[in-house]
Amino acid sequence: MDEMKDLGAGKTLVRLPKIVPEGDAWEQNRVVVTTCAISAEGDPAQFVELDADQALLLARGAVFLLRARQVDPAEEKEIEKQRTDACTRGDGVIEAYLGTTWQIKDVYGDADGKSSSIRVTGRHPNLGRDGLRSLLCAELLRTGDSKYYDLRAVADDDGRYLLVFWADGKWHAWIGRELERAEIDAIEVR
Image (tube, rainbow, N blue to C red; front, side, top):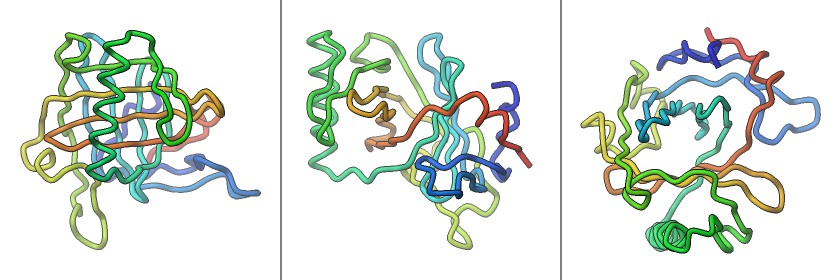
């Protein structure tokens, strides 16, 4: 992941693989919109928001390519309930979220008794102009940091990766996949 350390806001990722490759169209170029440091009790991670509603999560030596999923208020309550229930039961399973069962890999925030936070470390200089937007809540972008709760899980049926996190009063959901070493090596940061 050393080659990914220069992921500053405003940089462009060239030859980033697609979440779901389409025929010969395996690669795309994406602009870094925001960068965030996640502090999760000795297990730091980096969240890199890209244009086109995509993001990278760099955590535990892996890189995950994710696409944002809109979360309405009813689903926010369901996410919070599923996360709390899974932590309380201690079985590491989320039942029937988005029609599938998910195996929990990590949970951070009060449910695990650990303190976690997210801090915005970079913003694209043109954020808010020329159609460049962030999906992070406005309060987090304004203040730059927040308490942080998350859940990271893998789908039983197809290996999709799920990241749901709460920051400044809003749940965010991202779904994608883990990138393979060859895919990471092919990415160029400009």
